[in-house]
Length: 108
Length: 116
Image: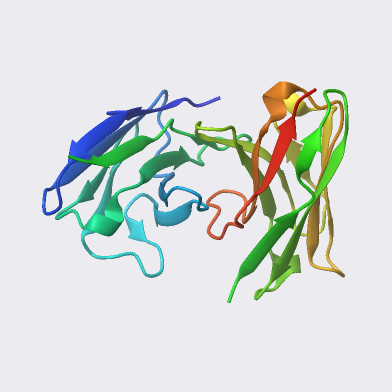
């Protein structure tokens, strides 16, 4: 099973800041990584796959990148609605698809 | 509009059983793999099972193999998760999602609590 490790676990940020989240795979997963956003009490929302292909309706301030074992999710200028938990997920080796433990963005 | 609506969760004693259902609409259900993912309280996401379009292939998380079974009824646009011999570690919100590699649409989930 591929282990996805996200860092940091929690990030305290202010609106307008640039945010960079990291995700590392325990072995190479090629480009087969997706990113999700989850707000409290809601289902996860797909943001990116491939890992830089934007899902429908995802704002341009969001960006996904990386390949192999190192992946990055960036928010160029954080908006108030972006406070949430973000998960990376690999789908190169399945079953199972596996998720990182998540990075929570807190309002500083 | 794609919609996935889970039902069947609730409080069950250890060793008990539940069958979760997921009603799909707004897309060609029989053209997609379907997936169940769970989330324990305050924890991250864990894939549980998936099933191919024609139910010819099913995959289940190793730790629940032999206890959980996924199935589908394409005539009713429903996917099921039969859960037997439940333990407290199975307590979670169970989400139904479309597709098997990159779940793109998710339901709101149904809460399963296993407790005596």
